[in-house]
Image (tube, rainbow, N blue to C red):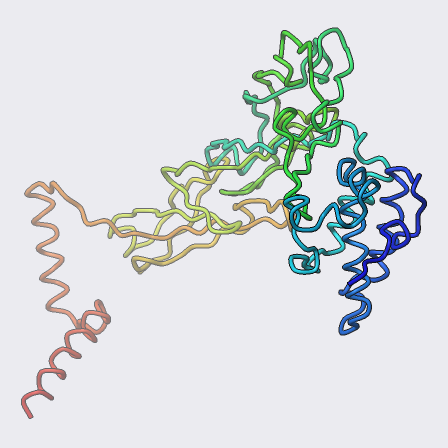
Length: 380
């Protein structure tokens, strides 16, 4: 089969420059690409011709061979290049066309060093309950990476400009050709930056950043709770190549308190009283997060009763409402009694047993009556 002239296929002259070949290929490839003309066999055939012509003319060695020998330069026996129609695939997508051609035409290979924002950091700050409830200022030390003062973050000695990488020509990527296709890889010489620092800064060894411990005064607002986070903008690690710093997150960890437990904005505590006060009533001091207050225990108070003291909890940092203090009464059984105390309790027990139990111990009476009924029903 007679093949068409490659220059005519791309619509260029034999004196066309490297850039003109790429421009023409991009325009035609986008027009006849199979993805834009699905089911159109003529477009697929046209795209194959365009791709074949481009692969030959874009390569200086192949172009020279074509100019000297025409299509016969690539037939069997002339080179290791086998028939294009037998091996060509249309699996070239638009990203290939833009990445290989479009970027080169508009100068992406001369890009500057890529800026990279600094990493975010997290600091776990332990507080006791009083500090979390009332708020406090804390001084913390953060190990981090800061911009090098010697080179101002450039990584170069004496503020010199980095040199363009000769291997990738500043692109950061290199193209390895395999037959009719090219594989893009990160440049191993500059590691993708596109630039080489010949004279690195002595202080930071060319990284543009140095390790440093930073002292920060953190204001903890009143009402923070366990696992709350406070964000400090731009207090994280310094960015690379002039990029902004990351952020610092302060995570609050509230230590266990010996008296109070917190649930939401309410505080809970247990108040032990003796059974005499529980039976007769009286006044008792209970702690709050600030000081002490007195509450009245009414006569015949049972163990487990909750007393709610309004407004003595935590001021919410979200709703600005203040929670309550809830005191749970625990009746304590006396221990280490002397003989006189034991005699008094024995007399009280006799008095209670001889009296109407319904009147003095209604819960006990109902409980044991329920047990008796349960076993009576089993024997019926």
